[in-house]
Length: 492
Image (cartoon, rainbow, N blue to C red):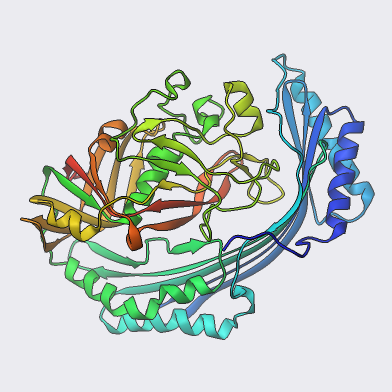
């Protein structure tokens, strides 16, 4: 579970380095400055066909400083900070960059007023992933890939990843926050090869499952218990009939729905996209702030929260990288768009109060608006009830491909496996299932949503955004759901 830390998660020297940088930025002319000293340890392992193929371990430590001058931000970073002078020089450099940028005329950037917190926070972790032996991790991954290979698949792969991040944040407003976040996850997949195509099956998701937890998450996934099953399904897909083309009732598994949320809701409600700040690379958004609070995003069953307080979810934290405490709010409520992912500067420009969603990929990247945990509240149904209530349709599970336009409006998704639904029963397996739609039309067709034990906060450890590119860790609460009159079996 998420909890306050009783011990200080970062050493006092980290605060001293960040404070020195902030003081120097102010002395050089900044009207606001903040600094993050980030110490991160990472580990990843992959196995293929019964052998360990890669093992990557790394540690990084560095200082990132933001400075605000007039209309512009400046940012500077320092790897392996050593000594007060280097930290101060980094703060001064951030201000100099902001001053150079502010030479281009523009309105001053305002920051939404915020309380300066002095606090520490640590994520819950029952079993430190870095304390588990490499031999045990290797045995797990090689074992499941050997099992899948023995079942006759062409390729079997498995992976494990962990991150341990300690951050000291200091701002010129008086904030002083220490955080210790541990994240972990794993997954596996296999490929079968036919005469003219390849089929893939994954567990528990096509990229694995991740959370702000320890190695207990990996143990709970129980990869060995599912290895034979997904190998058998991958083989069966080679001879399964193709997904039919046409318009029908679509039932999505929770993992696929989580990616649908990520791509067509999460990115669309990022305030920097809506304001046009991210148009160069990541695209913009179809949403118009003039319609915030009145635009119908989907059916009344559609309620999407922005919630970095969910225990163990991958997008959870105590404070974002502006020092704003984690808080739960709505992006869509009863089908109406009511909130955005924002930061102190973007919210001030838009005249909103939606902050707490600014994070950076390590010390050397400028903090920017990122998804936290963006997902559904649990619904009133179960998958069994959804299937039983469906006369004719297709159930699709586990993502295989995705495509969406730069406004996050028109999309097409492919899934690993499908099942025909006839007269309230799950029928024959279908290969190459796909579906397409337009955001508000698609979400308006949502008429059943599961919850209970079928709801899960799916972790996405590879969300890309920004220039230079940043990788974000996000979470998406989802469970199986049903949509009416959806175009499926899209070819090409």
